[in-house]
Image 1: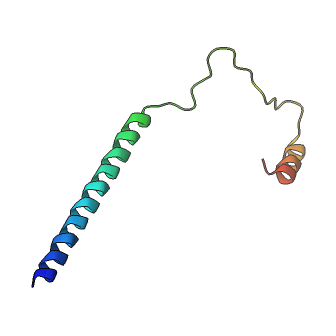
Image 2: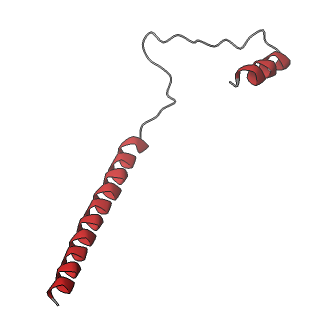
Length: 72
């Protein structure tokens, strides 16, 4: 009877620890989501930003060729 109760007690401890860790992970992810939800990734750059890509002078066929060759 004692080994059975010991096994139940150990199982209950593991279940409680697993549940606590799962809740900690869940609420941590929710906190991170709420932190970055208001973060605007596509705002115009500030400071000395330089535009790297210039689209003028290329036809659709040229751009399609580059897309298939380079996978961009």
